[in-house]
Image (cartoon, rainbow, N blue to C red; front, side):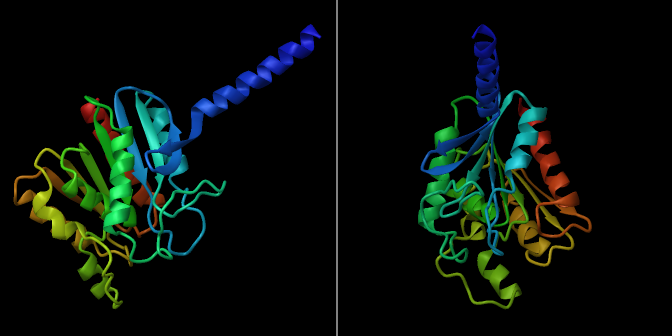
Length: 252
């Protein structure tokens, strides 16, 4: 009996440790996973539109890797409104069939999620990819001071122009970062990057957005990623994660 109890205890300990490594969380009004529980910096990752369908959890392993390399960080991979992961965890709200869904309502849900994880006196670094970057670009303007560093990866920062460049109809319901550029506070650091081979989001969209910010004295920098495409993989993912980790090292 004593030996059996010891084995059960080991199994229970393993389960508890696994739960600490990555746990499903209510992140304000949204769902997602937290990796790590470091007290020095909070990092949030926002996925793209995943327009081809399927679960929106491709940033989970990215978040896990950042947390492992930076034990002082708490890292959250958030499911945007209406999206779910492979395990069936789903965020409330609607993604409107994964189109024209950077709405005021959805942007407010993202902002509420960020407010829920923000800790007074602790820097908040947020990376958004594609549609996640578009929503983040609006949030930092409409909620000044909420985010310390915003990293916009493959950002369609001018929604009207983005749709025109694709030869597609406008997204009339969506808010555009470019329309709110004048409201981004100078206290927010902006780091934008887009692959030079991105056939979805032309680099000029983020480059021009950054120029409009830096012209007002905002600390905004654009970085082209040579040869990289739109998806969060390969050299583009490596470049984006490097920016996140540079910011963690800078402010910790």
